[in-house]
Image (cartoon, rainbow, N blue to C red; front, side, top):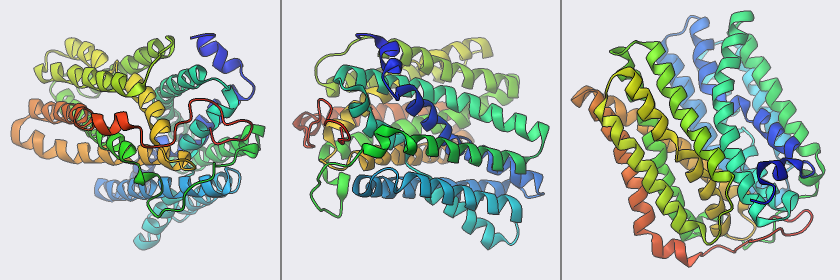
Length: 406
């Protein structure tokens, strides 16, 4: 691509928006880990920690598309910062009041998740007006997918360091303060202040009235299932192959593969419609999960995990382009937020499904569940190809002008 990643980052506000969005999403990226560590520090059991983490995850999944729709209707500044403040206040109240009384703990954690600002969708809505060229928007999507992998690697490390230096309470508070600062930096930027959603048709389904978008969401629900199952299955595999060290290497290799794949994907200029390319990428992603069923020694398994991750970031980056094409006019932030929600729900389902699979058939059965998720994702895209080629949403091949919805 002309200028590649450097061309994207040199564009006015691009580096600021990308880094600020990643910072603002930090509470969501490490929320589950921080909650579990905090509950354990307060003397709670893993059952309570898991239940609170589940409430947080479900509330976040429910809140993202609702807040995304609010952003499309009212603008970014009116929604993102208030939501970030409310989420941080709820988390801070939970950190200060503790895990008792239980109803209050569940209420505060649920409120924190429900009001998590849809910064991910908001950034993707901004790229067209910031970058001005469709090819650079596509590169930005790839760059964002790569940066996301870095965040999910660095975020847990930050929580670990804060807990070691101070406490789990401090980790919860610091992470959420950083999240508010990230959201503040986004909404104070000129592109965010100028952005307005395009005129939209009033419809209670919002973005979900697009059949093409529903097809994409269905596919990435199963991609999430695959990732959730891999996370649990890798932990079970590691118990017999070196414990936490083996698990850490496998997950790092999975993320490293995604990083490498995303960097390579974004460095090339892609032409033509994204839907056929997405079918191929997701098929390759599913194919990469199949060798994990071999469950070889830890070093070979780490290599297989590296290969399994290669097509994840490219699939996500291509999906972002497809979502933008199929989102009905005036629903772009909501549409991207639905992708975030669906992916998260799929990951939770994969985590839940892997347990019974592991109990019934061992480690190979767990990885079979992951591979099955990948295969189903590819099948959804194949079966819904006529719908996706129909491109039912309103296309936005270029910028909508200053402050446009893109």
